[in-house]
Image (cartoon, rainbow, N blue to C red; front, side, top):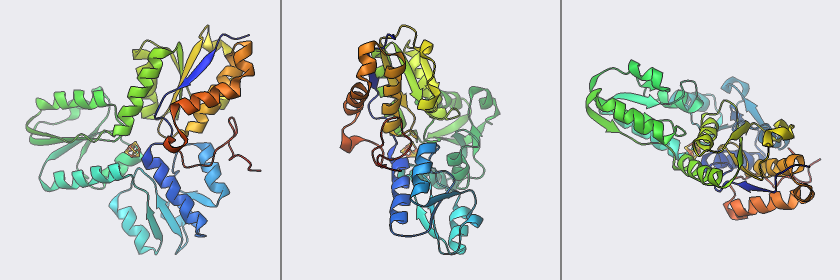
Length: 326
Ligand code: SF4
């Protein structure tokens, strides 16, 4: 018999609006009968990709894999301007799923270049959003961890901007560091509010529970940050990619209440499936018996149906296919 009596899902989790809209656009295009592709995985989540494949949406790595006249969805991260131009030149129907927040970042960069700033971009160098942003400011200096910051030159006129999912504390710290590097420093805070809210809600949940489970891509910076924040709140956190990673009840120790949170690419229904799995694996006899109802209650407490951040059809907890799908 386990010790877990209840589970909590952090509020305002699930897909961010940028990811949701890109997925919606791909689904609408396929529903209209168009041959539809996404340039790169629209979200790093196997279940979501499989669901899209089932309705005919194919992931391609290059525009060369898309036939003339077919639709190609640009994912929320955005792309370099040349990619858009090439897609149009090849006669593809471009469906722009670039997140509106990322479009703002791109516009800010264009403005900063025109105004002659030396630009420092806080971001992960190979992250698709950063790769796309560099198309608007090719000379921008990309820095990530604190060890990189010494590479930032001293210039009279500098600007600081950020990849949307960077932690706010890191952005603020870098801004402080850059004060000594320039005479004029322009700070354009493009850390996405969705990222900030998710971190706040994760912290709130972490303070109420004995242990946290963080669901998201292993290499995802925003998922790692959620794990770090839980530890800062004094609550041990386990990071997993999906429900299938939860096999060992001993990781829950003597925890009575477990919290669940996830990155911006994790559907909230996946968090519900994780909550149910925790209760079945490490719950008290009563909690294990009531696992489905308790996990559903945790989902309802985290988000009303209208407030859920996924556009996918409801899935049975634990399943990777839409409810009722073969
Ligand atoms: S994290 Fe924010 S900026 Fe990035 S895709 Fe989601 S909503 Fe857009």
